[in-house]
Length: 225
Image (cartoon, rainbow, N blue to C red; front, side, top):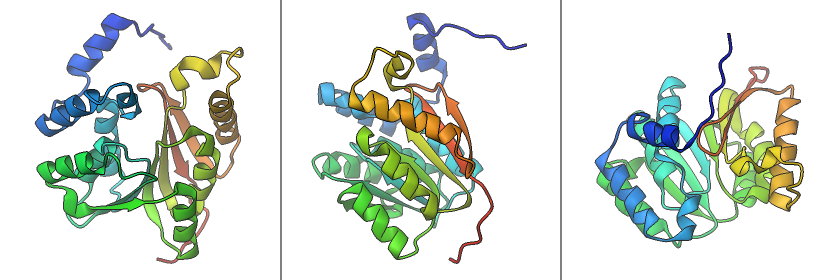
């Protein structure tokens, strides 16, 4: 029997209290990011970071790719989940917040696993395709209007059974409101529908924080290393 619950403020507080395991470095990074003001809303929730770390471990990923870095919380969490010789490449079109990210990567002892690239996500991803780079897991949390491009570029970069995780796919609930017709909402709404009908992948749209699309590339291709 399926049971649905309403996630009200009290339940959110409860989830924040017991829904993830506190980490002093992450807590400090979250606090410093919050002090940046309204831009802090670009940061993932700590419970999302914990989810990413667990997925990296469960999938036994060795090579991860991230589109959109901000202050580096998601990068840090995925790097924590990687094996000793694992690596994550993170792409962002700005280095404005990179010093903050690098400080906390160093504090967490994961900076040796991270390669940070400054550039346009679409262009860098295409260059990786041209050079036949492959990844086990790709996390997308960048400019929403390019989400369809990032998704399509992710698939040729993934090994069979590889994972794509996309943040903000519930977009503050606006995707369910037909009166919301701004470009970002329409883009995410359309992408959700496209993923649902995409026979190249298995997927689940999870109501974690602002919504995560969890996508598995089907094992129907043989790729060279």
